[in-house]
Length: 224
Ligand SMILES: [Mg+2]
Image (cartoon, rainbow, N blue to C red):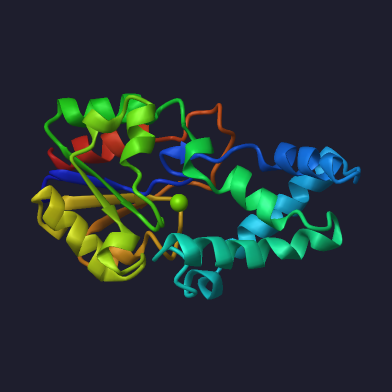
């Protein structure tokens, strides 16, 4: 097997976890004089988040600019207006802002383990803004060799073009590069670009390890 020399990570739900949207909904509803049970709020968010991951939503170009991002997500969040009138823009601001997201407990240790093995590390994300300050805010910027953002490339995952750009940025060939992500369509686009791919299990709780140690094991196995 060709040894893996570079690993590309998705950002959201892979290295960073979102704010607790259920709590955000409960609070935002209360500000509007609407009472909603935490379990109902959670279910409401799960519906919205799942809807946001469909191929139909991915095709709307929401990660090509800040404006498109706000418009497409806010339109989707309006589905919650039946439960909490007018909550869409608040939800966007409090949940979708990358500054509100935090690394999983095993994010830093995994990046360090790869770095110590001499593996190049890249981020490839469908995102409408620069993620470098987000990594810097959590002391992780030095562990990443290259960031490839959809809004800069003008292509979004699963378009093979964005993965090829990310490989170029790392200086690794697609065949010796592993893409790691949580989305079975968007992130799996890496396979069409000739990369290897590891799909994470569905995202769990923010305070639980994401299972990223598996990535280190895959890299080690590729060298034996
Ligand atoms: Mg993701």
